[in-house]
Image (cartoon, rainbow, N blue to C red; front, top):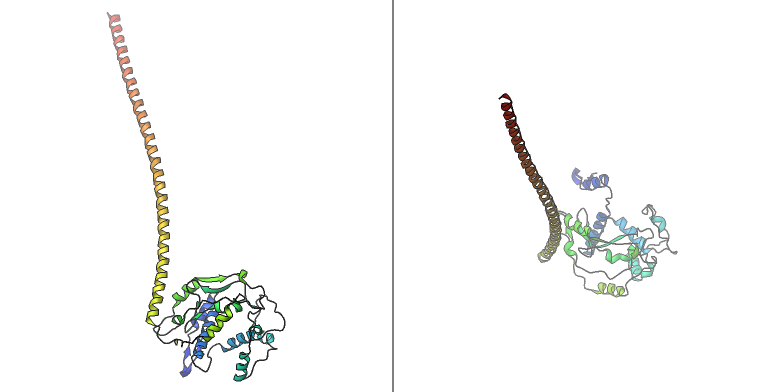
Length: 333
């Protein structure tokens, strides 16, 4: 797969991604799409006028949430194409036209007018955070963006709790000629992902459930002074970067230490087993040696008896010969 560029050149940047999707199973590009969307939203938040990424998907997402069907939805899971059927699902939705209309619309928008959880959402299990941090890292083509499912639990069919707030700007990075994609860091986050099972589903998915203090928390978040976020191409604060490296190094140290402890325990158990086997073999060898010594002593005794018997027989033969010679001499005389 190639993409034309200016100057008669082509871009083969996505060939590696396409190759993985074609040759390997259970690989999806959803995290890459989310990464691109969040990056574009961050750029727009910093003052850019245009949203340059998957704007169609973002539009489908927001319209699906803003339109609340007049009847209670039937929550099912199947393999239907919900992108193609989007227009039919929202055909009765009347979208505001113009910037002023949208501002007025959002000004009077309330929670009860929002569809928080899609009826067709795969709700059996969801990944809501990592054991490393209360968020995940999405790897895209151009860099890495944090993702916080804890802030959108209502969209995932769960009770909205008070999210764990943490400064994530130091985990935003952009790939460059000398800046590789931090795959190891992102993989560590996903290796420690935590899952909510079907038992955490809310009973009434069409009516959202929230923590009693969530509304106050959300209002306080909106009233906080917004601190300008670091642009993705600016350098990371060195002190924070050192802290992250120290924490990751400590995590690696603890993991390696635990692994070494496990290996040491296995080695000790193996050594104990080998010592027991050695003691058992030595006892058997001692027993065999005692048996052989007993057999040797018995053979010695029997040998002595045979020698004694042979000497006795020789003495008898000599006596017999002497008697025969004496008898012969007497007869001859």
